[in-house]
View 1 (cartoon, rainbow, N blue to C red):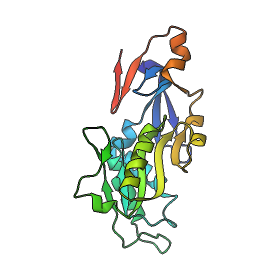
View 2: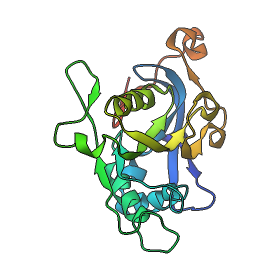
View 3: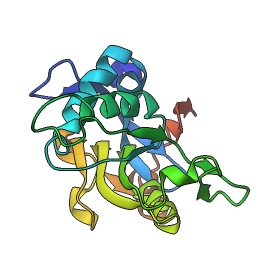
View 4: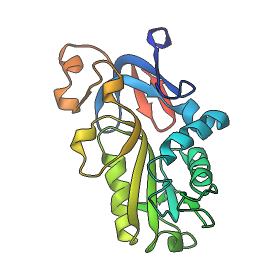
Length: 213
């Protein structure tokens, strides 16, 4: 599959790019015709810092932030994002403040929760939610439901990729969108045209990669 891959680069910062593999893929919730490899953005320290610089821009001069909640392996970016928001400057509103970086866990019912020792970092705090990819929106809305339960005040949502910006009621600051990938599509499994055409799945997309079929 990798021989079909192509690279999408962020125009204003060419050091930030993602690899895209066309094909027929499935997750637990949808089918898609492209696999997005975002791992290097999340695990390469130097690249993650560049990503954080870009994601900090909407918040630097306007938004008080107490906590960054990281989903889908974005903790390295989240730590750098906190550092960017805390930089010194007369127009940087979070200078001389504290910003915490936390991640929820799943309980036995697969509901997101915060452990007792981190709940105080959510209740009545200004939260930036950081996610890797927004496609069906299930992860996003699960996180928002969790934060609402604990009384967190959402002041921003950031993503590396947002498949359908027009579908979501919340404003999402995303580096890449579906417009950056030619003919990017997601489908309900029962309506997938590739399945109807008899095309076999190439791989199952999992939390930290994919499993070839």
